[in-house]
Length: 331
Image (cartoon, rainbow, N blue to C red):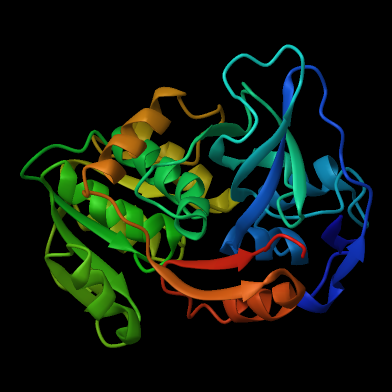
């Protein structure tokens, strides 16, 4: 099968298109013919290993200190069709159209992947009927993380939430989910993304190159910093007395300051999950998609052989929503 192989950390050019062995499913696994996958900012950070401490150290220990050893194929989101099922699989059949997330297993930049029907890490589910493969491939990473963080922030109808870095995968789903929960949403990102953010429901938008939300004097029940770049002290002062500050991409210093804030004030700081998402989250997301209350934003689409170009584009930080890689069937 064709796959994008990754043998060393570095710029997009370290990714290479190669022929590799087609995987064989175990008894509890399904073999999925992948038709679409994505390039997330997280994929690019792992590829280059430019991750904040201590996350970067943990990933090197997991994948390989000097070069990737545990896995040589990146990619965490996918959509496709089940080609083979293991003898113990009960939830799926050959021909099922599915979408999934590989978790820390990666491996989605390929024509095929084997995934367990049930796992604490990745997930496979029947894709929403209203979505094609390209759309379905973009959902599980951004939507599940956005749903997790908003629930941890105890979001309520009528609250005011500010989302910093709202134009990416997690951010675009967070805007829509916050509106679904009845919140008033302020979205912060670059100027070229503001129209898109309004189109998916943001009540107010801020161009961060022209305005610093932490200096406006406005306060919010939740500040959700998707990119982890807002000044901590001023962002904390932008919260109500019992507000929640959510940081999706924290470094060690931010984590320490966040823990201290949570212990010494009425404000709470939320970090990424240490455990897997709840299985029922998939049901919630699918129901919202089918009801037309949650949609994906696709910026650009590339074929598998141009994955390097896709990574270069995501590295620019200009991505609006999602970047998709398509893998058509061979003729």
